[in-house]
Image (cartoon, rainbow, N blue to C red; front, side):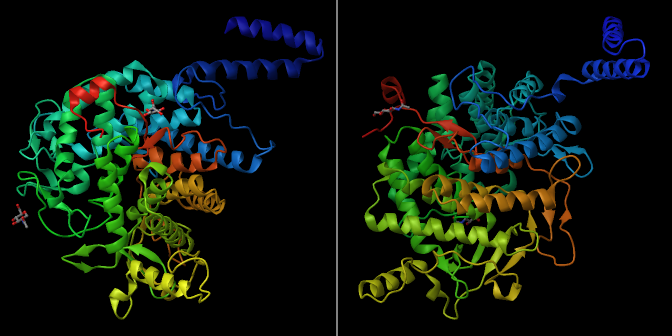
Length: 585
Ligand SMILES: *[C@@H]1O[C@H](CO)[C@@H](O)[C@H](O)[C@H]1NC(C)=O
Ligand SMILES: *[C@@H]1O[C@H](CO)[C@@H](O)[C@H](O)[C@H]1NC(C)=O
């Protein structure tokens, strides 16, 4: 420091001559300030934003130019999302790390997922894709030495740990090829394996990562599991088996899949029950839904097949049958604005409930129809595409309708006087028949067209049954996949509108927060003081990818797990096919 003060005063003398006393002191002061802040600021608070090259494989770091270039509009918007991510993650880093999540209003911290720092793990691949290299490597240091241990009597929630922690580590490994991540993935995978020790092979709710004790958890004493909790680990464990060469990971995760290939569990021609018995591996009741509790199971049928190079045809057939059955039995169109939605069926009766969570479905259908190897018939393909478009329009308009521009979490949809009149496949068939008779009904069937926003609550065709927005990603995920598969810029514009609503209503001093009362005319939404890690893993990642012109994560080379962690498409080797007994017929 002495050195710099000396040379600085010499410099000042040279530049300003004898008369430069005032400048002399100002310069000394500025240099002292610079030296002290740069030595006092811990390494983790610094990051470089722009970077152009990657040391290793995986998608390259984006070169986001500042506005002024040929694509200044969208590159500028991508950059705004990156700034939002940096704001949110730095808030977490300064105030909450190594706890799981930040409390963004008060600057507090909370452990929701076993205290292993879930926001770090969920953020790694987003940092990589955004080109935030310093932040990535600082975070690698922050999570070094993690043992994923728990005291006896505490249980890790298997499903959440797989999709957030394991998925996050595997994706960051695939992108950066950093061997430290491979070691952590293998260790965590080993510690989670006891969850599969049930007579059916379906994983239990929770596992103690030190002793291997397990619990039925939330469904305790009942020995049942949600469909989604049993079938949202196959992408992670299969990729883990591939990169470690450890057959145990493959065998554990494939055992419940084998039960799915049998026809006896399929109802309504392709739907799977919500709840299953862990002892017998049989359905425990006959409620159906595409929302929470089954959602990502359907998602992983398609995505396992995509990730493992489209060779396992049983998996493809499982997806096609399920998607057809969802379209046939769960999709309804409302009477007022012809909003397309997916209902729950409880004991055979449609509830006409719809959830923000179900907005993953248009993305899934669009991804499927975008894949030639799926081999849909012309008729199926049209229905899948229309359903994706119609559902995505509904998922947009529930944002556009509200005063905040953010969507409620749950809805009750208006039904027809004769409710079955809303069955979408029947309306489509009717429309096609009329179309065949040249009745000039336009080029799109009911439930597919764009819908205008409606400020008047009574005229909307639904009521909100949970008026909160939890920073959820499903709708921007759908915008991203719709944009990539259709090229229609309206999906980007809608994503930008959502981002602006996020900035306006959810940004706080420390990060971004969930809000309540998204549609109150008199008040700003009430801020809830939580920032779920999926906001960093999914919401901001999909928005960023929606705005970058370059396709950083090509859909034919990468597959997103249900927490938006991209895993690479790979082929099983000959040895794996033999050792694991994989059916690639
Ligand atoms: C579902 O599980 C519960 C609790 O184990 C049990 O009481 C009920 O009989 C089961 N229902 C069916 C249809 O298996
Ligand atoms: C997988 O194998 C197919 C040939 O069956 C090949 O075209 C493709 O490039 C391979 N994919 C990868 C990721 O190696």
